[in-house]
Image (cartoon, helix red, strand yellow):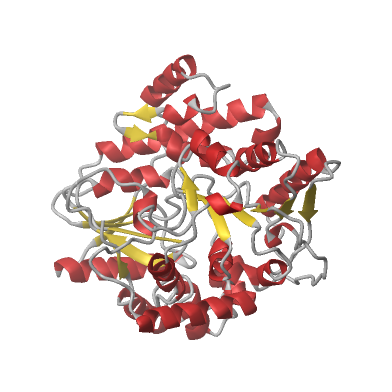
Length: 462
């Protein structure tokens, strides 16, 4: 970097949809400091021999047979495991074979080491803003390093849209500190906002296609009654952002799902229903990750299919259709899914991880942050579990579903580009890179879109 210039820092070229996202973030950053910035695309292709030596140290000091210990790998003060383990479990074979897991571990830990060592070396005084995407993986390490220098960090991730934060306290922050919904103890939700939250929840319940990744799914309607079910478990993607909102004792949701089932079947009175995520069952978006998710789900199914106390839903079913057929005293369990907000709205009691899309300060679900705590929750009956706190619940829902800059809002970048460029929303969601590479868009149109998007970026207070 030229020490006489000020830069906007990115990890990828501004092409495809990123020409809009990076362009909007850069323009917003320029307004913050009232100065033009030079775009700096950080590239590090050099082999790092110190990283190789450190990797060897990790191998000898870490017991890779212990999933608890592999979560403790650090470089200086930065937790490598938190952002590396999810990369390892994107690979299907990491679940099946020890050799594959070890190979992926070495490859991913090396990549994490090289990126953090590279970022730590960079002179940061000239960096006046940074756009970092996919912060749930190793890019999250970049967020942690740059944020400590009070550099404005721009990112995106459910349930937020394009957002930024400035870490004025120079404390260590993680990706979830940016994307999670915050509780403002000084500002109570009002009746108008509660009404808006209720309205949005009803729309989500009855029109699941409002959720972008559900639009291409052909849901199946069935009329089975589940009056005897004591527990409903929502299965999640096994290969996408395993530690999206932090670590809670489980390195991946496959282990979490197995653990949950094994604990619940210890009580012979429990009747368990396991709902596969709808995206496991449709073929219009056959990415490797979707294929792996489906295989892993059916691997779980085959393990427990002979247990008479367990029923699997292995076809795409709308959440509302299912909830209508459950006894109101059914306990609902999700690791981190927002489907439980729909269940809470219908007065079910729910169990979830603390590593979820909203702050632990909210009293919405019965939550855990380690395996012992979770095990104690699973043995509780319906009466022993807490119901949600009304204001907390509606505050979460209002911030997720009614935020015009958030994932469901009209200024969410998918939504906004869909309208401006006349492209169906689900096509942008499923294949944005391919679409934007093919579509010819004039420079004036691009600049106009970037200008508008730059004024619709959410400030997240840390």
